[in-house]
Length: 105
Image (cartoon, rainbow, N blue to C red):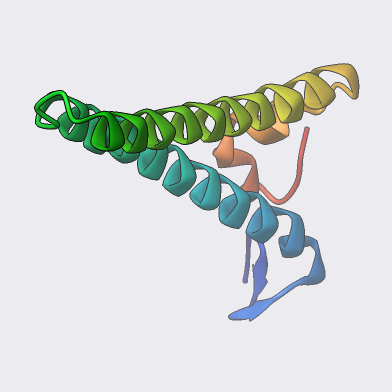
């Protein structure tokens, strides 16, 4: 019985790319969510600072760092998809159904 990455319930070595793909996507989504949360948190701190220069500066640092992090995360997505486009393997990245079909087209 052969189904995707498994033969009789045992994982094959060609499953490693799909595992790495899933882990990287999960990490990037988590990093993006954290960046967005920090932007919101910095905005709340900025609004509630009451004009205190020290608190305003701290909130600006949080927002700046979060935006830089978000740019890095989005850039990494763009780089991965660009490389996939150049190597003509974008179907492997954008279509997760290939895992169950037993390989990339």
